[in-house]
Amino acid sequence: MGKLLILVVGLVLGLLLARYLRGQRAGRDLTAPPPRPMVRVGDERIDNDEIRALIRADRKIEAIKLVRERTGLGLAEAKDAVEALEQTMR
Image (cartoon, rainbow, N blue to C red; front, side, top):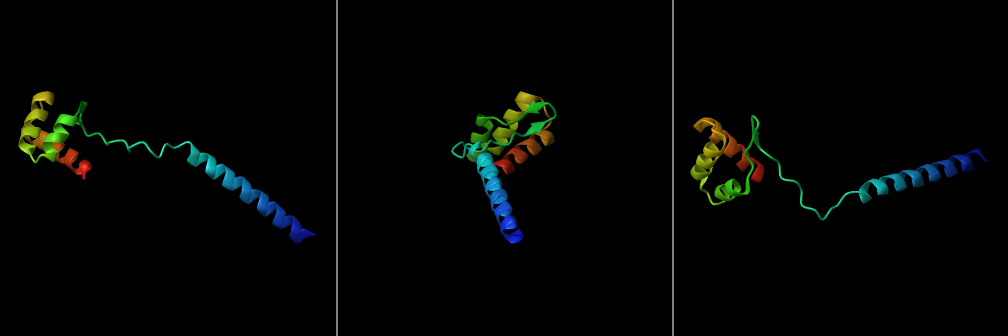
């Protein structure tokens, strides 16, 4: 009798755990694209479609110039920001 009770309790706990885990997965939208990571330098948001397009086209110098114009960063900081954004795109 004791073994049967343990088996039934184990079965009920297993079913409850399966239902709980299935409910957690149902809340996620698996068809949505993953969010793009943003690159920030200080308070300035560097991530931008135009800058990404320049990086994809291997026009990194123009991307650095654009970051400098928009943020007022120095050359080294803008270069680091563009390289960081480039790393997130890989």
